[in-house]
Length: 289
Length: 214
Length: 127
Image 1 (cartoon, helix red, strand yellow):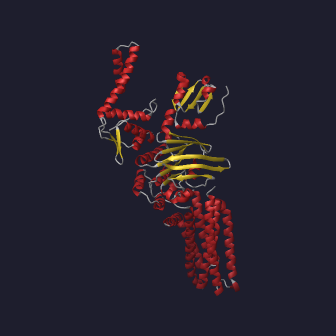
Image 2: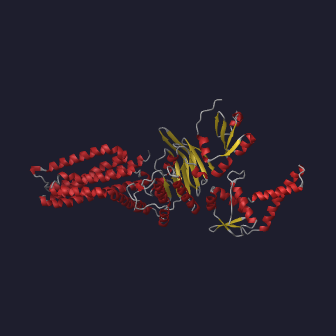
Image 3: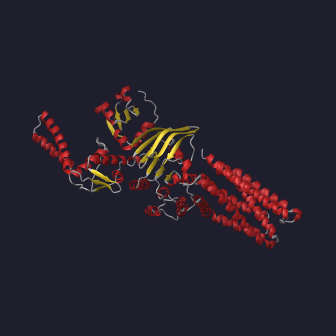
């Protein structure tokens, strides 16, 4: 069962086109959505949330469309976008009072527990909160109505390491407790290194791949060696290859194949999600010998 | 339906949280001025209040990027627009009533209660007409870009109401003394303003859905 | 209580490491029959791997008869023919040892040296 199902999605802008023929976000897992700035992550999320209308295509959430069942669907969605939209001059408690009643499944105990645990000052105006507290509050509000789908768009951007760790902790706790689906869009790939289940890479409005994160990382490696080893045959095994004056380094998505090809003549390093993103999407000049 | 109430409650809570001192100050100023007896010239006060709360609320929301919130709450866009119009309508009525009450005290300075009643209808009509024009502009252009247009509309409203007030001063009487037809005239103008308000609501809903595509 | 330590950079896939370690602890008796194991989600969080990995590990262990899941209650160490499972394990070890012995004989390495090597490896494992 897929929480989100996208088919034939097209959205055109003057300088950019988003084109996703097919995309499924599976239920109960954390799907990482990575890509450069401007790759189309936020546009995709806006389309999912019905904030903008597509030129073509259909998006189904919990099997239904926003046009027919928008209100119902949104009862079970928590969104943490880059801005909360909370009026800055209002107090934290006032925002809570305004928003909580909208949700049938609001869990006040959960809300209070998190507010106390992270010491969010309820009587402060929202604009007086630090960046970290602001994001935490936004996340707590999104989680307190027990959504089945949580959509996060750059949740840890601009946060200090401590705030970032707190956000990731809350997410891991909630995933351990309930079968929530999380769509986690970010370019801070280290967030997903230990927490993602699936990984989607998007670049220039197109999907590059959708894979299970653990098997992707287990099968990928960075190969480093002498330029003489790069021939038209060997070049083909690399997804991204960088050649410099002192040697080459490249990403190979099939570590076994790399070992077969190069044996002991090269260095093998494990690849991180960041490596995969960078090597797959960078646009380099070809190297002239 | 419950969502509509919650949305209106939200708008009112934001208004109260952010603007109460400003509103009270202006209310006190208007009261003071009315007591001195310049009620005819100060007819723009409820208009000013409505302008501030209607425009001010939209402006606050735009600063805070509240559209994200509007789209993530479990509500339809049509409910969001309807709630805003209802809130604004309630504001128009409330402020007009407040000034009507204040102006009743102006009987001390020699106005008749009939003319004060006419002023109430007048305040309400002009308030409704003004917001009917402002709101669709805000929905279409956003607050920042419609500032100039809003300024122009306000100016027209001010000048227009001044002109209308001037027209009332037939025969040199400084206060309004409506005849039966003038009474009908006032109710007629209010009804027209009401119709304009409803049309504006329909139009804004359409615009909000269309703008969403961008 | 189950104890699992994963190596991120081993040639062995992570789900397999989990399978091996849980299996080993069941057979050695460290995990008691009927003992409750962490849910796949909690395990994923504690090991910092994806839920798919822990799910696959548990499914594999269930298929091999080491674990059983009761809907609504959790995953338990199966009380299913522990003798047979130990036999299977011993058979596998015998297979490995046979390979080692064959290799040693081919290189004319004496039995004592091979036994020494085994002893050393045991010591390394417990570090």
